[in-house]
Image 1 (cartoon, one colour):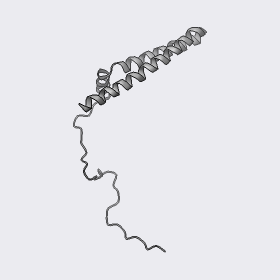
Image 2 (tube, one colour; image 1 turned 90 degrees about the vertical axis):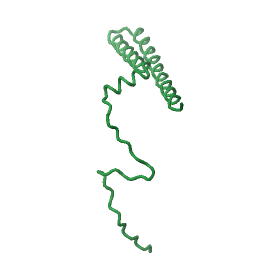
Image 3 (spheres, one colour; image 1 turned 135 degrees about the horizontal axis):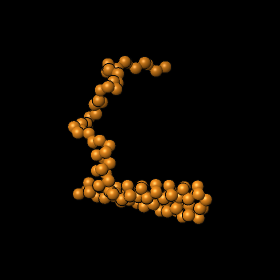
Image 4 (spheres, helix red, strand yellow; image 1 turned 90 degrees about the horizontal axis):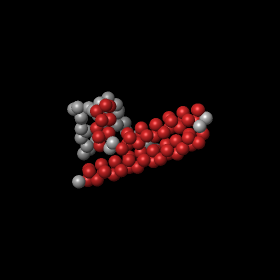
Length: 106
């Protein structure tokens, strides 16, 4: 039979206190960025992502409208356009990530 461990004299974990991690000092931002400010900053850094998102939403909306009206051929074309716009958005995100990684290296 194993012997019982001695009880630790340390206080239990207190979630209201910042944990102490050796070699790490947390930074406190003095001026938190609002959602609007962050959106504007990110849009200026990579303007192709919001353009791609708007194009995707527009193609989807118009495609659903055409589907509702019974224009199946035009609806199919718009759904293919939506896929292309989504692809454009993903490529824009990846290029933006690559650019910011290159920027942070130099």
